[in-house]
Length: 381
Image (cartoon, rainbow, N blue to C red; front, side):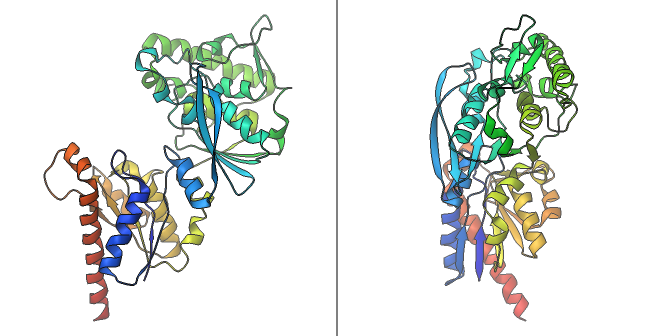
């Protein structure tokens, strides 16, 4: 019997690697002599770089960058297969990098994300996958593009810094200095939102509040974003304002698509492709996946749905061991997951569940494999 374990981490309690070990221990107890393998999985959010590098046996590269407030910081990205890089923008421009009292999207920039991209290009890497969740920014990607050589000019021809408040000041865009390697590089953007750049569902009004934007600030930034989109269209012929995903990460999606000709793709699908997940399924009899909490959202770009669909396409059953179940969790059954097994086995507070995470997961794994063994015995009759 060949088993593959491909679960997301349980945030705050269990890493993917711990889960793989717990499943392996349990499987060997219930099915002595079974063949077990496991891969850490992420959906394009936190942990994506670590997951891809662990499976591909790549390396982590540390870089000195400028954070969301242009402070000095250190960020890292992954290099694998000799020509590829995986980058999380949150490592250089993430919301947790900005103290709560200083959060204001008028003042933040994606410049550091651009520095990570530039470093990868300078190293000769020509296949870049960029995860753009968790940003502290709403600068339309100007900061990142400025780090790559694009100049955003005001009415006096003066170069702008590339922060959120500069959106309304842009009058011209000079792309002549864009990093020459961009033209020969394949950019994939891991993005699971379809928001346009502007409008009620756009970057500013959908995500700006969580980045520190007050109603007044959001109105100011929306006007600036509309102006910025018009300049991109009028000066460069780049019409990205209503493109699905353009509003991701405060408009970084628009910049990556417009200036770098990037392709937007589901985060989990990108990760599964990068680690060669379909090849890992060869000869597998059962896959165990999961995440900390499964609910209706899990069917939209989360690890269980991505893994489940790949299994479904190969005719391989998958089950999900999860921390807890929420409303609409059964939606996941449409995506190749045959059953859901929660780790919680009694009434308890979340703090207790986290403290007992290893014990509870081990128990759930044992229950899962025992039920599968019972099913196999029934099939023999």
